[in-house]
Length: 140
Length: 140
Image (cartoon, rainbow over all chains, first blue to last red; front, side, top):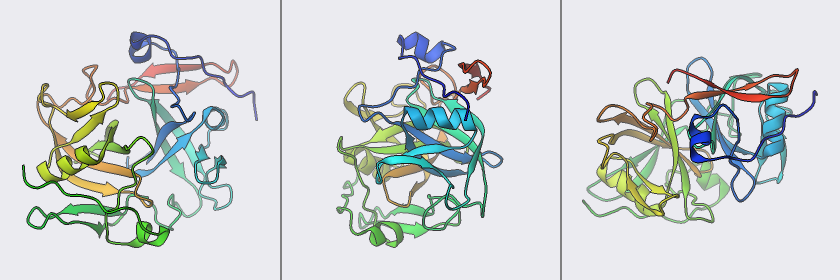
Protein backbone atom coordinates (compact mmCIF):
# COMPACT_ATOMS: atom_id res chain seq x y z
CA UNK A 1 0.00 0.00 0.00
CA UNK A 2 1.19 3.52 -0.74
CA UNK A 3 1.57 6.16 1.95
CA UNK A 4 -1.78 6.72 3.68
CA UNK A 5 -3.27 10.20 3.32
CA UNK A 6 -3.80 12.26 6.45
CA UNK A 7 -6.60 14.73 7.08
CA UNK A 8 -6.40 18.33 8.24
CA UNK A 9 -8.71 19.46 11.05
CA UNK A 10 -11.98 21.16 10.03
CA UNK A 11 -11.90 24.91 9.38
CA UNK A 12 -14.66 27.49 9.36
CA UNK A 13 -18.23 26.81 8.26
CA UNK A 14 -17.47 28.49 4.94
CA UNK A 15 -14.32 26.41 4.42
CA UNK A 16 -16.26 23.23 5.24
CA UNK A 17 -19.05 24.03 2.82
CA UNK A 18 -17.31 25.83 -0.03
CA UNK A 19 -13.61 25.06 0.34
CA UNK A 20 -11.51 22.66 -1.70
CA UNK A 21 -9.91 20.99 1.30
CA UNK A 22 -11.16 17.63 2.54
CA UNK A 23 -11.45 17.94 6.32
CA UNK A 24 -13.73 15.05 7.37
CA UNK A 25 -15.52 15.65 10.66
CA UNK A 26 -15.25 12.53 12.77
CA UNK A 27 -17.69 12.30 15.68
CA UNK A 28 -16.83 12.05 19.38
CA UNK A 29 -16.37 8.30 18.77
CA UNK A 30 -13.80 9.00 16.04
CA UNK A 31 -16.14 7.76 13.31
CA UNK A 32 -17.78 9.23 10.21
CA UNK A 33 -20.87 7.76 8.56
CA UNK A 34 -20.46 6.26 5.10
CA UNK A 35 -23.21 5.14 2.75
CA UNK A 36 -22.39 2.75 -0.06
CA UNK A 37 -24.51 2.85 -3.20
CA UNK A 38 -24.27 0.93 -6.46
CA UNK A 39 -22.17 3.07 -8.79
CA UNK A 40 -24.35 2.25 -11.79
CA UNK A 41 -27.90 2.21 -10.45
CA UNK A 42 -27.53 4.40 -7.35
CA UNK A 43 -29.25 1.71 -5.25
CA UNK A 44 -28.48 2.15 -1.58
CA UNK A 45 -26.58 -0.90 -0.39
CA UNK A 46 -25.42 -0.33 3.19
CA UNK A 47 -24.61 2.24 5.82
CA UNK A 48 -21.48 1.84 7.92
CA UNK A 49 -18.79 3.84 9.70
CA UNK A 50 -15.15 4.71 9.12
CA UNK A 51 -12.40 5.93 11.39
CA UNK A 52 -9.52 7.98 9.99
CA UNK A 53 -7.47 4.90 9.17
CA UNK A 54 -10.25 3.11 7.30
CA UNK A 55 -11.00 6.29 5.36
CA UNK A 56 -7.33 6.70 4.48
CA UNK A 57 -7.07 3.05 3.41
CA UNK A 58 -10.22 3.38 1.28
CA UNK A 59 -8.72 6.32 -0.60
CA UNK A 60 -5.28 4.75 -0.91
CA UNK A 61 -6.43 1.29 -2.06
CA UNK A 62 -9.60 2.17 -3.97
CA UNK A 63 -11.50 -0.44 -1.96
CA UNK A 64 -13.91 0.21 0.91
CA UNK A 65 -12.57 -0.21 4.42
CA UNK A 66 -14.87 0.40 7.39
CA UNK A 67 -14.64 0.35 11.15
CA UNK A 68 -16.66 -2.49 12.62
CA UNK A 69 -18.34 -1.09 15.72
CA UNK A 70 -19.50 -4.54 16.81
CA UNK A 71 -16.07 -6.14 16.49
CA UNK A 72 -14.07 -3.02 17.32
CA UNK A 73 -11.66 -3.47 14.42
CA UNK A 74 -10.74 -2.35 10.94
CA UNK A 75 -12.90 -4.09 8.37
CA UNK A 76 -11.79 -4.60 4.79
CA UNK A 77 -15.21 -5.25 3.33
CA UNK A 78 -15.20 -8.45 1.30
CA UNK A 79 -11.80 -9.68 2.46
CA UNK A 80 -13.36 -13.00 3.49
CA UNK A 81 -16.61 -13.02 1.48
CA UNK A 82 -15.17 -11.76 -1.80
CA UNK A 83 -17.71 -8.93 -1.77
CA UNK A 84 -15.01 -6.32 -2.26
CA UNK A 85 -16.37 -2.83 -2.85
CA UNK A 86 -14.31 -1.12 -5.53
CA UNK A 87 -14.56 2.62 -5.19
CA UNK A 88 -15.74 4.45 -8.30
CA UNK A 89 -16.28 7.78 -6.58
CA UNK A 90 -16.37 9.17 -3.06
CA UNK A 91 -18.43 12.24 -2.23
CA UNK A 92 -18.72 14.27 0.96
CA UNK A 93 -21.68 16.27 2.19
CA UNK A 94 -21.98 20.00 2.93
CA UNK A 95 -20.64 19.95 6.49
CA UNK A 96 -18.25 17.08 5.82
CA UNK A 97 -19.65 14.65 8.38
CA UNK A 98 -21.05 12.08 5.94
CA UNK A 99 -19.58 10.20 2.99
CA UNK A 100 -21.19 8.70 -0.08
CA UNK A 101 -19.32 5.82 -1.75
CA UNK A 102 -20.25 4.85 -5.28
CA UNK A 103 -18.99 1.27 -5.54
CA UNK A 104 -18.92 -1.83 -7.71
CA UNK A 105 -19.35 -4.97 -5.65
CA UNK A 106 -17.28 -8.08 -6.29
CA UNK A 107 -18.00 -11.73 -5.56
CA UNK A 108 -21.70 -12.53 -5.70
CA UNK A 109 -22.57 -8.81 -5.61
CA UNK A 110 -23.99 -8.90 -2.10
CA UNK A 111 -23.40 -6.36 0.64
CA UNK A 112 -25.54 -7.48 3.56
CA UNK A 113 -24.28 -10.03 6.06
CA UNK A 114 -27.72 -11.73 5.86
CA UNK A 115 -26.94 -12.72 2.28
CA UNK A 116 -29.05 -10.08 0.58
CA UNK A 117 -27.72 -7.66 -1.97
CA UNK A 118 -28.77 -4.56 0.03
CA UNK A 119 -29.23 -4.13 3.78
CA UNK A 120 -32.46 -2.21 3.16
CA UNK A 121 -34.66 -5.21 2.35
CA UNK A 122 -37.68 -4.25 4.47
CA UNK A 123 -40.17 -1.43 4.24
CA UNK A 124 -41.60 0.24 7.34
CA UNK A 125 -45.40 0.25 7.09
CA UNK A 126 -47.53 2.46 9.34
CA UNK A 127 -51.24 1.86 9.81
CA UNK A 128 -52.85 5.15 10.92
CA UNK A 129 -55.99 3.33 12.10
CA UNK A 130 -54.30 1.04 14.60
CA UNK A 131 -51.04 2.95 15.00
CA UNK A 132 -49.19 -0.30 14.31
CA UNK A 133 -45.81 -0.19 12.59
CA UNK A 134 -44.74 -3.37 10.80
CA UNK A 135 -41.96 -4.48 8.48
CA UNK A 136 -42.72 -5.67 4.98
CA UNK A 137 -40.19 -7.53 2.78
CA UNK A 138 -39.02 -5.64 -0.31
CA UNK A 139 -37.10 -6.89 -3.29
CA UNK A 140 -33.56 -5.56 -3.12
CA UNK B 1 -51.94 14.89 13.98
CA UNK B 2 -53.12 11.41 14.80
CA UNK B 3 -51.78 9.46 17.75
CA UNK B 4 -48.01 9.08 17.44
CA UNK B 5 -46.73 5.52 17.10
CA UNK B 6 -44.44 4.15 19.77
CA UNK B 7 -41.60 1.70 19.28
CA UNK B 8 -40.89 -1.53 21.13
CA UNK B 9 -37.33 -2.17 22.37
CA UNK B 10 -35.07 -4.26 20.14
CA UNK B 11 -35.23 -8.05 20.46
CA UNK B 12 -32.76 -10.74 19.51
CA UNK B 13 -30.45 -10.56 16.52
CA UNK B 14 -32.78 -12.87 14.62
CA UNK B 15 -35.84 -10.76 15.47
CA UNK B 16 -33.97 -7.62 14.38
CA UNK B 17 -32.93 -9.12 11.07
CA UNK B 18 -35.83 -11.36 10.11
CA UNK B 19 -38.76 -10.31 12.27
CA UNK B 20 -41.79 -8.26 11.24
CA UNK B 21 -41.59 -5.87 14.18
CA UNK B 22 -40.09 -2.43 13.76
CA UNK B 23 -37.76 -1.92 16.72
CA UNK B 24 -35.47 0.97 15.70
CA UNK B 25 -32.13 0.99 17.49
CA UNK B 26 -31.39 4.51 18.66
CA UNK B 27 -27.79 5.22 19.61
CA UNK B 28 -26.48 6.35 23.02
CA UNK B 29 -27.45 9.90 21.95
CA UNK B 30 -31.04 8.77 21.31
CA UNK B 31 -30.67 9.21 17.55
CA UNK B 32 -30.92 7.00 14.49
CA UNK B 33 -29.34 7.85 11.12
CA UNK B 34 -31.70 8.57 8.24
CA UNK B 35 -30.77 8.95 4.58
CA UNK B 36 -33.15 10.73 2.24
CA UNK B 37 -33.11 9.80 -1.44
CA UNK B 38 -35.22 10.98 -4.37
CA UNK B 39 -38.12 8.52 -4.63
CA UNK B 40 -38.00 8.50 -8.42
CA UNK B 41 -34.30 8.61 -9.28
CA UNK B 42 -32.76 7.20 -6.09
CA UNK B 43 -30.36 10.15 -5.94
CA UNK B 44 -28.95 10.58 -2.45
CA UNK B 45 -30.08 13.95 -1.13
CA UNK B 46 -29.05 14.25 2.51
CA UNK B 47 -28.10 12.37 5.65
CA UNK B 48 -29.59 13.44 8.98
CA UNK B 49 -30.73 12.05 12.32
CA UNK B 50 -34.01 11.33 14.05
CA UNK B 51 -34.98 10.83 17.66
CA UNK B 52 -38.01 8.72 18.55
CA UNK B 53 -40.38 11.67 18.33
CA UNK B 54 -39.22 12.82 14.91
CA UNK B 55 -39.43 9.24 13.63
CA UNK B 56 -42.96 8.90 15.03
CA UNK B 57 -44.00 12.21 13.49
CA UNK B 58 -42.51 11.23 10.13
CA UNK B 59 -44.60 8.05 10.07
CA UNK B 60 -47.76 9.75 11.36
CA UNK B 61 -47.64 12.78 9.04
CA UNK B 62 -46.00 11.29 5.95
CA UNK B 63 -43.48 14.16 5.96
CA UNK B 64 -39.86 13.99 7.10
CA UNK B 65 -39.07 15.26 10.59
CA UNK B 66 -35.49 15.16 11.84
CA UNK B 67 -33.62 16.06 14.99
CA UNK B 68 -31.31 19.01 14.44
CA UNK B 69 -28.12 18.22 16.34
CA UNK B 70 -26.78 21.76 15.82
CA UNK B 71 -29.92 23.46 17.10
CA UNK B 72 -30.92 20.73 19.54
CA UNK B 73 -34.55 20.71 18.42
CA UNK B 74 -37.16 18.90 16.37
CA UNK B 75 -36.88 19.90 12.73
CA UNK B 76 -39.81 19.67 10.34
CA UNK B 77 -37.80 19.74 7.12
CA UNK B 78 -39.15 22.43 4.79
CA UNK B 79 -41.43 24.10 7.33
CA UNK B 80 -39.79 27.45 6.59
CA UNK B 81 -38.19 26.81 3.17
CA UNK B 82 -41.11 24.96 1.58
CA UNK B 83 -38.76 22.04 0.84
CA UNK B 84 -41.13 19.57 2.49
CA UNK B 85 -40.08 15.94 2.05
CA UNK B 86 -43.16 13.83 1.38
CA UNK B 87 -42.51 10.24 2.35
CA UNK B 88 -43.09 7.71 -0.40
CA UNK B 89 -41.49 4.81 1.44
CA UNK B 90 -39.38 4.22 4.52
CA UNK B 91 -37.00 1.28 4.74
CA UNK B 92 -34.89 -0.02 7.61
CA UNK B 93 -31.61 -1.88 7.43
CA UNK B 94 -30.70 -5.35 8.66
CA UNK B 95 -29.87 -4.46 12.26
CA UNK B 96 -32.43 -1.64 12.40
CA UNK B 97 -30.02 1.18 13.17
CA UNK B 98 -30.36 3.05 9.87
CA UNK B 99 -33.33 4.34 7.88
CA UNK B 100 -33.77 5.01 4.18
CA UNK B 101 -36.43 7.56 3.25
CA UNK B 102 -37.64 7.69 -0.35
CA UNK B 103 -39.09 11.19 -0.65
CA UNK B 104 -40.53 13.73 -3.06
CA UNK B 105 -39.26 17.21 -2.31
CA UNK B 106 -41.57 20.24 -2.37
CA UNK B 107 -40.81 23.91 -2.99
CA UNK B 108 -37.86 24.42 -5.30
CA UNK B 109 -36.84 20.77 -4.90
CA UNK B 110 -33.74 21.55 -2.84
CA UNK B 111 -32.54 19.69 0.22
CA UNK B 112 -29.23 21.29 1.17
CA UNK B 113 -29.07 24.41 3.32
CA UNK B 114 -26.44 25.78 0.91
CA UNK B 115 -29.10 26.01 -1.78
CA UNK B 116 -28.09 22.92 -3.71
CA UNK B 117 -30.44 20.09 -4.52
CA UNK B 118 -28.28 17.45 -2.80
CA UNK B 119 -25.81 17.83 0.07
CA UNK B 120 -23.33 15.60 -1.80
CA UNK B 121 -22.14 18.21 -4.31
CA UNK B 122 -18.38 17.52 -4.02
CA UNK B 123 -16.25 14.56 -4.97
CA UNK B 124 -13.25 13.51 -2.89
CA UNK B 125 -10.22 13.20 -5.16
CA UNK B 126 -7.06 11.41 -4.03
CA UNK B 127 -3.74 11.83 -5.82
CA UNK B 128 -1.58 8.77 -5.08
CA UNK B 129 1.56 10.58 -6.25
CA UNK B 130 1.40 13.48 -3.82
CA UNK B 131 -0.98 11.94 -1.28
CA UNK B 132 -3.14 15.09 -1.54
CA UNK B 133 -6.89 14.82 -1.05
CA UNK B 134 -8.97 17.58 -2.60
CA UNK B 135 -12.63 18.33 -3.19
CA UNK B 136 -14.00 18.67 -6.69
CA UNK B 137 -17.43 20.17 -7.49
CA UNK B 138 -19.97 17.74 -8.92
CA UNK B 139 -23.30 18.40 -10.55
CA UNK B 140 -26.04 17.42 -8.14
